[in-house]
Structure formats: structure tokens, C-alpha cells
Amino acid sequence: MTSSPAWCWLNGKVAPAAETTVSVTDHGLTVGDGVFETMKVVDGVPFALTRHLRRLERSATALALVRDGWATDEAITAGCRDLLDAACGAGADVGRLRVTVTGGPGPAGSARGDEGCTVLIVAGPVEPWEHGTAIVTVPFTRNPTGALAGVKSTSYAENVVALARARAAGATEALFADVHGRLSEGTGSNVFVVRDGVLLTPSLATGCLAGITRELVLEVTDAEETEDLRLADLVTADEVFLTSSTRDAQAVAVVDGARRGGACPGPVTVAAGEALAALQARTLDP
Image (tube, rainbow, N blue to C red; front, side, top):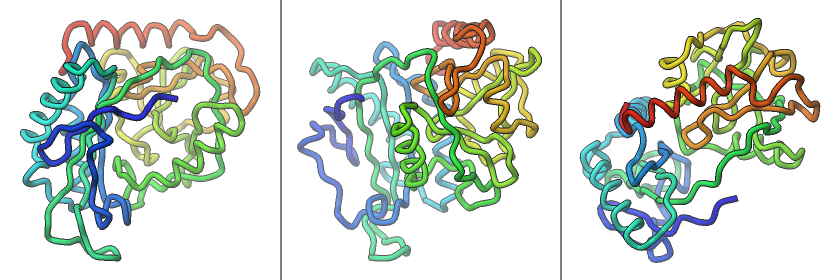
């Protein structure tokens, strides 16, 4: 577990988190009306910022959330810079930034108010993820035709429930199938499997999030998207690994309490991790 973020940027103002407040009527709080992005920070710079802002725009568009005022790319980019300058200057341990854009203060119920978006950026540390992690599968499903399919929304209660189930079982992540029984994603990660020597990941048609690290792995390896994966493949595959902005490529050793066979991390997982590291060494905004 990481400690609470020490610094934040809220609608243009940088301050210690303990001195910052959000309205009790904010729709991000009351109805989960918002979108967010989490970025790895490398050498004081948010990694793949352009890609994250592009996905933030896709998510906001899906929610018909107008990004004006402090919610524009230019304002968020400047906010990230100012926050990192302040937090790093104060000696804070910063390994990631989370950008959240909500519908702003609004009335009770689902209708939005007219005060505009709330934009919050928080800086926090990152503890390294262990290789050989344990995962569980859960009976809940992703709906690829739902309004929030593929949207990085703050409406995360389903993920909270699934991850709590995983933690109770001694695992660090929970994996979902979609409503058609196809392997989809984790609560905060994408999944890759090596089957018959081929590196595969679930297609976006399964309702999984278009993860930034997933996208990069597809670009720097010979991985393929498919709709032909099932939860059972997590057990029988040659290798399994998870990806996210803070995990990079994290090997999976245990599925539903049963240890998988073979090396962990396996050679394909290692190669994917090395390709990501080489990309990061070349550029922080690929």
C-alpha cells in the first residue's frame, strides 16, 4: 500500500493535499460523473502524457463532458508541470500523477450543473510491483455495449468490489470476462497471454479499456489482439502478464489459488518488459 498523495493541483492552484477541498456537491463525488488518467512519472516527467490526454478526451466525449476552462489539454499539461515542480521541490516521492476531471458542482441527481468541470491532479509515490503475482477470476462481467465500455470513468465501484474479493483471497488483481465469456481485463490492468508461442491480448471488442501500456506493448512486440481468449487460458497459457502505467509488464504466477507452471517471468514477459524499458529510455512521450 502506498501512502496518501502529499501534493495536488486543483483548478489552477497547487497546495498540500491536506489543505485542498472539493465541493460536497461535486458530481465526481455524488454520482461518479468524471473521467481520469494515471501516469507514471519518470525523472520528474509524466510518461506518455500525449497518449493519456488523448484517451482522456475519448472518455470525456463518451460522457458528453465538455473540457473547458481548467480541463483543456494546455491547462492540464501546465498543471502537471507546476505540481511536479512543487512536489519534487518539496522533496516528495513522486512516482505517478492522477488527473481527474469531473462534471463539477451540481444538483442532487444525475443532471449536471452549470459551473463547469472540476480538475484535480494528485502526485503520489509508487511501490514496485512484484513479479509472480497472484490473480483471481470473478463472476462479474464486462458489457462491451454498455455506456461506459472502454471509458476510464470514476464510476469504479464494480472494480472496488472485485479487487476486495481478490485481496481477501491473497491476490493483487481480479480478472473479468465479458458477457459473452471472453477474457476482458483486470480492475486496473490489461492482460496478455502467451498461447502456443503467440503473444495475445483481448480485443477492445470485449469491453476492456484501451490501456496506454497495452497500446505500447502492441507497438513494440509482435502481440496480437483476439476475441478468442477465455478465463481458462489464464491457467493453461504458457505465460500470463498484466500491464498498466505503473506495472509495466507484471508476470502472473498464481491463478485462483493454483500455481501456474513454467518460469515466472517467462521469456516473452521479460522481452516485453525490456522493450517497454527501451522505449522509455528513448522518449518520455512516445
